[in-house]
Length: 269
Image 1 (tube, helix red, strand yellow):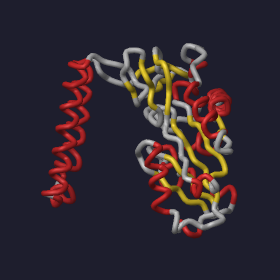
Image 2 (cartoon, one colour; image 1 turned 90 degrees about the vertical axis):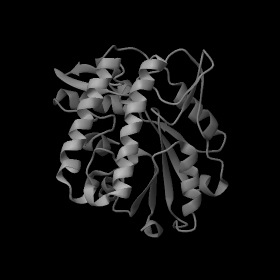
Image 3 (cartoon, rainbow, N blue to C red; image 1 turned 45 degrees about the horizontal axis):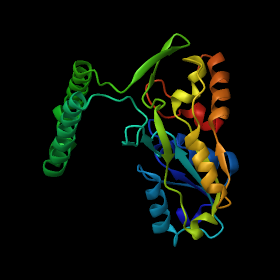
């Protein structure tokens, strides 16, 4: 229970451990290592919702609990582009027409799914076609549409002679970077440290193009939280060295087909 927790991990899908099993979530792994009650308070949204989520739970949190807050470089920051646009995701840019075709199709499918589940839940719970065949047809059409419009957001690079997928990619040609900074004093006094999680591409950049990449997102985070007396830890170099260690063993610290860290990465962190 959250009231029993001595350590609270706050973040998004990395702390929820998307693509991993429940036993391998960071909170469960950390609890095994430290033998301290650990709780994960996650919301798949931008950092202002981390703060709102904490505010909503403050009356339940153990007064002595320590909070560790995680920002993800892929979607927790906003980038002011040179053309005046604000970009929230570090992925490839496409022409509006091609992207809109794909986006509208995917939106239609999601709306259809929600309608089916809400109106005809018996189909979702019992119907073999809906549970088994429809997801496969969706993947087929999404893949076909991505190829037809040339808008697949994933790029592939070979590492250890294996294809590795990368969704978030480094943004260039931007003027500034910002993110939501938590200012609530009750939350700040409980935050023990803040951790910056780099995108998978930056962790494996040495094995792709060996390019030096901007760290303006981390610098913005560090500059603003240092004014509030909170330490910010950059996990980039640590994860790079971990990735190199596992690469020598023919293993990875991120899922090959996903943007999130796997059990190896979670154990390292």
